[in-house]
Image (tube, rainbow, N blue to C red; front, side, top):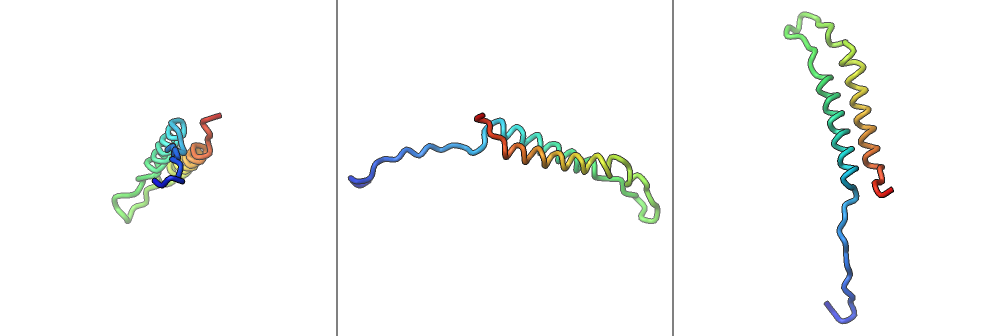
Length: 83
């Protein structure tokens, strides 16, 4: 260090805190659950139709859970835990 330079104290800190990460993991779990519920429903034989692919779980519930999970993720990013 030269004579003219003053030592600067650079504090390292994280942008997010524990509360933010908690909501992020909750959102990730909800998104994962939505995709798990969306999976399956196909037929073993391609010549037969399985109407199970159009049930409530795969058409309504699973996409709603995925969207809810993304909303939780946005909330976790915008959350200011210092207030």
